[in-house]
Length: 484
Ligand code: NAD
Image (cartoon, rainbow, N blue to C red):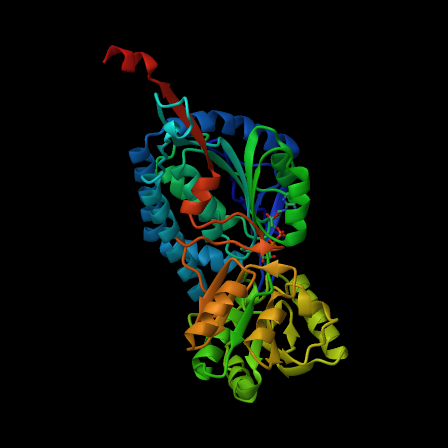
């Protein structure tokens, strides 16, 4: 008999609320029941926007020093409750406790950077006298908050990606509604708790739990919402872009990131970085390494090294410090990845290691000789699978790396400055990491992609630009001049 446990409540307009209809939350590694969260309705979403209208007025009136103090207190709360936050991430999501702890540390950073950036939201003066006849005008522009932001987030970084929405929104003086993934909503609710403790005024932040279709779409379409900040898959992003109407959209989407290894690289270092970049968070990482282009002369050496290292990745219980890799977010996802690998192998790919599934766990997998017409060759795998390609030279590597519909980040291992600069210039991506894999990021850098990987940039300062609008103030000083 299942005992009725009291589930987690959602946070709407400053109140913690529950509903009769709920979503069950499970631990992906053994499908054990964790708790429930409310299954919000369309009416709940509409009510949340009404609350956010009040929140937008409140938020815009909070002086910058107070916004900064709130963000600092929230960061402090997260940092002093690091263990609780890490355990939540590692329980509801795929990450191991080590990976979860590092996500909590990054969340603290994200909030602290937001606090810092709040003081740097400036405008500039405008030289009106550039236009003949306007010599007596002076003025400036400043940036004002956009109003209500609806932020929709994915399952794979359930805390820090939410912080990347809330931090800049509050720094800029906006109200924000978070619709977290229904698979991992608990970390976002915990972050709301940090903001309550930090003294964020009522109505400024809501975290509404429910389906993308009902809650997400209601928020996306609502005319009072001035910006949709979305992080998730390409198909969902495209759907949201079609629904949003006349409002700003920020799109942080997926990818199948390339990393290039040239013959002069440190092969051991490159292989180690690619293993970490391909298999961290069980490969469920938008900048994870998916395609590696290796110069022919060092191909065999690199292949042997990456296979050896992939075999040492320790799969197991997420809560153990000794575990390197946990399960995928659920068994359905693990089966999807398995099917993609099987299709490639059936079509002629060589399975160098891995290819084994047990429940939601999928072993670190390395493939070579993957034919171009396999789905895995162009689509985002979002699982622990990496593809090796032999290339003649940098030119061929760049051409192949660019020959997909995505463009988030890329890595290149080389000690030759010219090759590094060529790669930086010619790779069609939002970021090129030299002597690192595609999986390198700090929270204060501009982050986002081109092509199917998205629109706009996050990274606090860059998100703040999108979350504010410039307003021009002009003074006509003719009368003043006449007095002199
Ligand atoms: P997803 O697209 O399935 O879901 C993301 C969010 O969208 C969830 O909250 C979901 O409930 C919501 N949603 C679903 N349908 C919706 C609709 N019709 N209207 C409004 N909202 C809707 O993505 P996911 O599986 O949770 O996450 C994985 C994807 O996210 C991968 O493609 C990954 O690359 C991408 N991602 C990108 C970044 C980045 O910064 N570029 C970071 C992390 C993840």
